[in-house]
Length: 102
Image 1: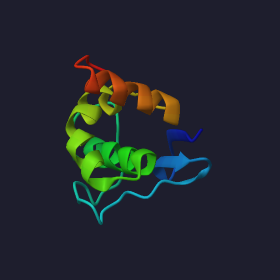
Image 2 (image 1 turned 60 degrees about the horizontal axis):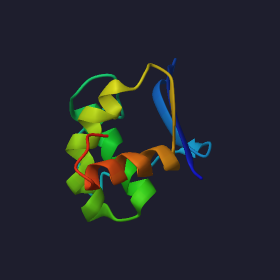
Image 3 (image 1 turned 90 degrees about the horizontal axis):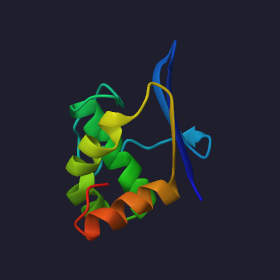
């Protein structure tokens, strides 16, 4: 199970997957050059949503299709310092597939 963690420090917003920096996946879609953000809806949170989904799913097209609702329902609601597991992301995806909000 992968563990995704985010927090803010002197270097700004940092996001890791299993302790390594999370790839922002600008190769799939560039929403924000300024880096990842969360706690609100916008381009930085959108880039984080895409990166998390790409890493979890390994399927960029599917990740891109889920980016907007994942940003609104999950990333915008994260605390200043947060932790998400692959299981939690998968549970959100399953809920969406069954017509329930994550």
